[in-house]
Image 1 (spheres, rainbow, N blue to C red):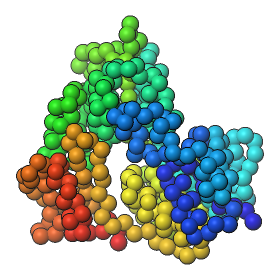
Image 2 (spheres, rainbow, N blue to C red; image 1 turned 90 degrees about the vertical axis):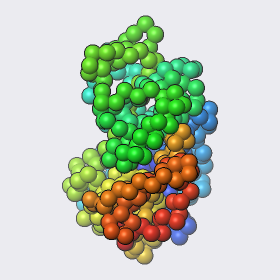
Image 3 (cartoon, rainbow, N blue to C red; image 1 turned 45 degrees about the vertical axis):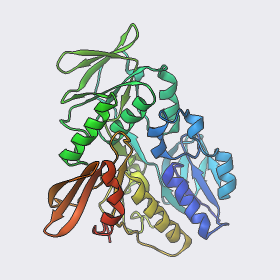
Length: 380
């Protein structure tokens, strides 16, 4: 019997394998990954400096331990070159192939490279997995200076984490606020104020054009001609779902790999979930939808076809300098209404009397459970 094959051992791949093994302990299972296969929680990558943890400290299990726990074969440091859909096999970069009965693509998203020039691009890092984190941490001297490109969720989380870990942090972004498109302006201002108060410096409405070698680190040239000197640069300008393998095999891709609510592509033997998947038109790069998809797909692979349901999908932003939880309204949403709460902000998005979304800061985050019950499902 050919195995179920999962491509990817990030949060999506390993969570799906665990959920499937709760239902079926014997069907052959193979996981293939281009990295070292260690199990870790990706959201913890932006908390490691505050906890003084290196990459080994964030790793939870080795691939050998995971293989034993999951009763699975785990192939590490292997790239899948192509999918032979007719033959139901994967062609691998080591010259071998792997047959499958069902195939699940859980390849996540890749970082977008910043459009900068200069002779020190080797000092520009992105942190998208545990190995990236290890390389970045080794390159950063103790109490060093870091420039973060991008003021989105990941940029702000790393700014808080690095500053708490004792580093000097400068955030540079072309946007006029932090986390544009995710937070309403009042909540964004609160986050920026909180980070500024712990010592994070912001250069908003500016961007880096070059990163060049300097005597002590690197020199960043900004679009206005000014220069900054830091030790290393962390790029956090965004993620792009990994769709190349699926697209090259003839599967439909858009923002992500297009799947229905059973997480199936138009090939009934191939599925996708996690950051690489676009589920019924939605590509949500967050943990809660990933977990919902893993539970549903495990049942489908077991033989009980299950459509995924997205309830309320709030996003917790890991910025202890200003705690934030946001549930963005679907579509155009309604009107944002700002209410001061003791120690924070309660910002509600309403259309008439109907709550469509919210943003809570500071102590107001304690109201999330009550508000979640009032929100419409993202995908009923």
